[in-house]
Amino acid sequence: MQNRVRELRAERGWSQADLATRLDVSRQTVNAVETGKYDPSLPLAFKIARLFEQPIEAIFQPDGAAGT
Image 1 (cartoon, rainbow, N blue to C red):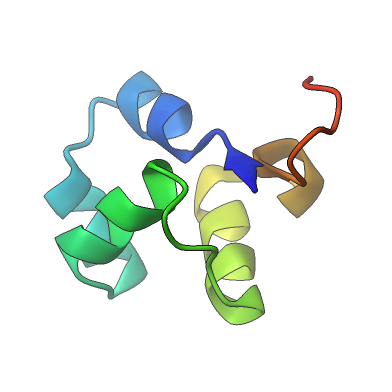
Image 2: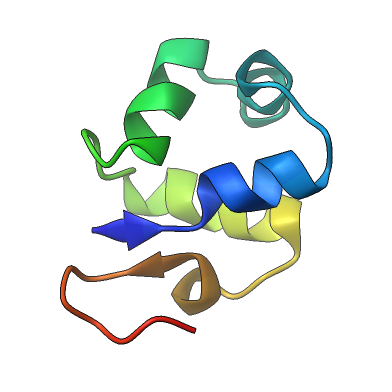
């Protein structure tokens, strides 16, 4: 799955640790999501979407899907 988490985090000037704290996950989880090594659970994906005030579809796309 492709995602825009790193881009959205960087736009806000947050470190991975900052984002991890806001999401109540480890920094390693944030890194794994950003690098595509881990697809977040649906509850975590919703939490990310709410935090960035974006629909899930604007953040996460299946591999091979057209980008926004």
